[in-house]
Amino acid sequence: MSAPYPEAPFFQSLAQGDPNVQAHWLTTEDGVRLRAAIWPLAGAQGTVLLFPGRTEYVEKYGEAARDLALRGFATLAIDWRGQGLADRPLADRMIGHVCDFHDYQADVRALVTMAKDLNLPQPFYMLAHSMGGCIGLRSLINGLPVAAAAFSAPMWGIAIQPVLRPIARPLAAVLKVMGLGTRPAPGTSRNTYVAISPFENNVLTKDPEMWRYMQRQVQERPELALGAPSIGWVSAALAECRSLALTPSPTVPVLTGLGSDERVVEKHPISERMKRWRNAGFREYPNAEHELMMEQPALRNQFFDDVAQLFAAHR
Image (cartoon, rainbow, N blue to C red; front, side, top):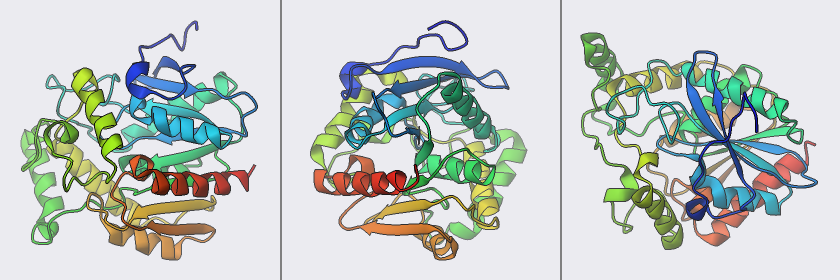
């Protein structure tokens, strides 16, 4: 494809899913190069804009795109700035950094412009996981042009030990002001979680096959991996979560899914928002961890069925 969306690399053997996937470079208004992947589908009922979580990359959603295609939807996923093969702002590529969470909205605008320029099937829908759920909520508030949206374990609060919670936000802000914003957050590792953690008692999935799927991707293509968040990222994330908590919900029809055994994001902000969000549904999936789209087959299928039912009702 000619400019402005030249072809980008994509590791199909790791992503699995539909081999007809197309990967392209796109550039934001502030000059950051991102990568997006399109899983086209003849006769699609619409296109799902898939917002990944922190540390993630488009190959991770090859199987999810196949699940969505089986239910009638094309998929467009993104490598956020600082992740996957998108531009990374720091010399140490394993530290995830952003100065302000609103910077991610430039990535969203570039993705929507691309979807329209390429005439991807409409209506558009949003499916957002974890950090992508934080970005996605802000996008909906800003008027993201989607007919409906679904969240998987959205990061509307970060799980922090109770003893540290009162000081986490001011400490991160102080360290950022002291010029330490690009340092790894205390207690984090430069290594990506799936590369160094055993399957037993991991916080992402109870499905060993999906665990191996994620592990193999970062082992064979370490350039996709990302480790610790920076102090600046933590400060920006906490500030955005606080700001969102004070902002009314949009009117877009929504489904939010959360695993009963969730340990990565904070549950309370999710339940509180869903109590107040009109035209929204909430479902807790039993015996599920953080990654609903990478969980055991029955749970994964149930989540995608629920998402597809919502989307199909708003065509």
